Image 1 (cartoon, rainbow, N blue to C red):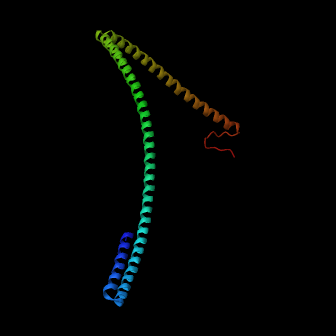
Image 2 (image 1 turned 180 degrees about the vertical axis):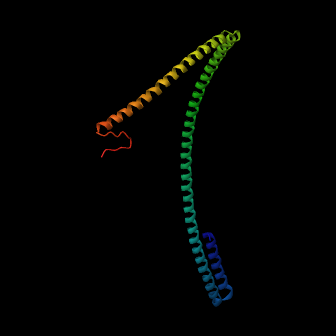
Image 3 (image 1 turned 30 degrees about the vertical axis):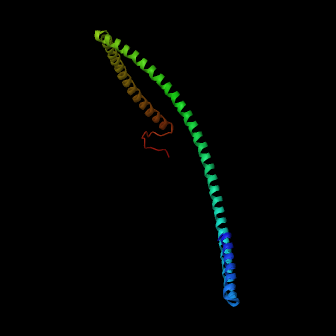
Length: 200
């Protein structure tokens, strides 16, 4: 209850007590006064309880307000941090975009050069096609093919001869190895030339 209401109640009780004394006599006035004092005590207790509750409510409201302020400060700090990160990321993305644009420009220049080179190659192929159509290139190619075929035949003949000589050389090596083995067996003092023979 508010202080103003408490004062009004007290005044009403006092005036009531005066009226009771005036109209009902002393005994009744005492009873009414006692009743008024009891009500006053109850009103005072209620007022104190209300004041305590108001204090508790105020303290809780203050605590809640402080928590809200702290949370708002934390949110603001996080928002600032996020803004700083976002700005840094934006700058990084901008740098990367510039680098990508520069690479794209270089690639465009390379493609333009490749286009020019391709056009030059098309002109060269067109000229070669014209030569092929008049037959001069084909005649030269046929002549080179005949020459290559002759060279291949000569190389095949030389390879066959080399293979024959290699086979003969391998046969001679086998004979020499057999002779060498036989001579080693004779040097050991045995006349047995069997490959399964072992000296005691």
